[in-house]
Amino acid sequence: MADKNLIFNALAYKDDYSSRPGLDEDFKSGIPGAGVQMYLKNSFVSLKSAKLHNPNDEVALFTNFILPEAWKIQFQSNDISIIYCDYNKFLMPKETPFSLAFYKLCALDFAVNHLDYIQYCILDCDTYVNGDFENIWEDSRDTLLCKNTLNPSNHPWRKEISEIYYILYRTKKPITHLSGSVFAGSKDVLKRYLSNCYECYSLFIDEYKKNDLYIPISGDELIWSMGYENCIYKMNSIEPYFLNVNHGWSRKGFYGASHMRYDGQNICIWHLISEKRYSMIWLYNYYTRHHAFPDIKTIATACRIRNIHVSLTLLSLRTLLLDKNIISRNSKKRFKLV
Image: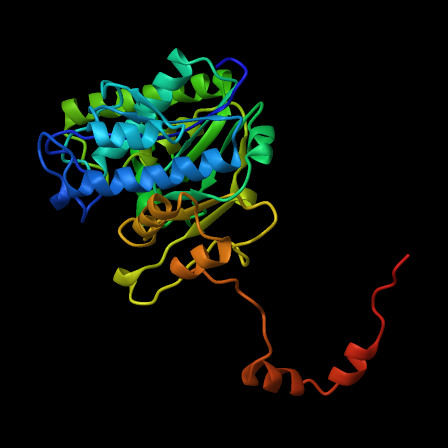
């Protein structure tokens, strides 16, 4: 263990707790129902793809419930460890949206305090890994590597995080809004960061109990973000290696991607936010039949991801032709190669 890195997912189940608004009706008490099955299939795709591209790293699923035997065999026979971790830290009121997502904080805290690895990376279950983590490990050697949502200061979630931070610390400023989708770092860096996160969590719970502080809508990103605000070291951005895709049937054609090319040289993680029920399940079924994942272009097509190209349109042509100097301006050699 000591000479390896760890890549893992975290999946929890708890009665009356929320995984994600809109999916809770799928969760059944006692045994994994349809919702848990969906997340297990997502996690298998995430971790198996990570292992294929990073054979020298350990991959694992952290969970607080006992998996059925068939699922244990499915994960373990594919070199994916199953690690039991009780949900006994960072536990939020059950009414909190995404209340089960706070288990990621609990699992990461357990990993860095009880498991001996060089570096750690926790990923959301709805991710597909299509490259090695060499750059990720390098960029998270001495600092925290994570994802800034880049939301404006008036975004409802970021605004809420800033307001709660002010209530707890009496410091009024726009707080950096971190995504809860990926975190990487060394044992020492993550321990210090999680210590800050737990301080913020404890203050929030005290305020919630004493003064009836309102339930946050920003989920686990509230704690990730406030914890980082109290850090003394800088954050490295995972953006060069991370494709964030947010579109789907429910969005009626809306398309959003964080990079112009899905096959960029350094991109090694796809976060398929809207594909939990769709392409991630297709990828799971494909792998169980063929014992391999499709090529990257086929996966992109299935996930409705496209490379964005700047092309000449009638509107752009008309705009160019309105420039009377277009020929002379574009015929000049403005750059000289030396």
